[in-house]
Amino acid sequence: MGIKEHLEEIRKTLPAGVKLIAVSKTHPAEEIIELYDCGQRIFGENRVQELTAKQPVCPGDIEWHFIGHLQTNKVKYIAPFVSVIHSTDSLNLLQEINKEAAKNNRVIDCLLEMYIATEETKFGLSADEAIAIIQSAQYAAMENVRICGLMGMASFTDDTALVRSEFNGLKNVFDTIKKLDFKDKAAFAELSMGMSSDYRIAIEEGSTIVRLGTVLFGKRNYK
Image 1 (spheres, rainbow, N blue to C red):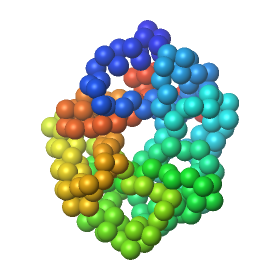
Image 2 (tube, one colour):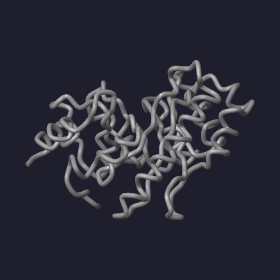
Image 3 (cartoon, rainbow, N blue to C red):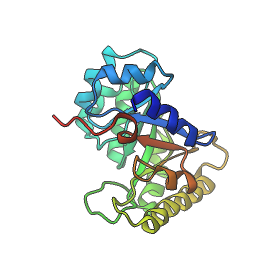
Image 4 (cartoon, rainbow, N blue to C red):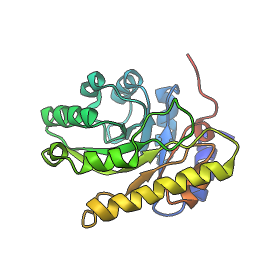
């Protein structure tokens, strides 16, 4: 089964209102264009160098999402075109995104990356840290970023009960923050959780965005 057939099969499993990000990391622009020709418009990359190489040679109306760990000194390279940054994990990074977005006369949508997994290697904020950023005077003064929701990665494990509990916990944090700080703001609506191995559970627990690579493209082409 090829990329096109994989996309068709996955689309059948996604409820209305759940966005699919095709995670194209390590895969060539040709494969991105193949999915684009099937109607896919949202693509995700996790390395700045790879994203900036692919963006100019891909169709101009692709909505690019950055989903990997982002260093402040790399923001300037993607600020001219990136649609959403999922991995905003500090006030410092949010300030840098705001600064570079302003230089490009844009508003960049951001998701706060939350730490929900048991592995120590994952990045992310606690609920208290996220609320502190949202309620800060610094964020209130920013005009070129918009916090639109939360993102989280569950533990990489076969323990589906653990994965479900982590996603459920993130949904509860999302609901709390929505009620506290974004009650009247429709833009705060996105919960990015679920990858190839666990996206079905994530959807059941309230995900609005799934980030799928392997189930679409096949195994990664490591260089």
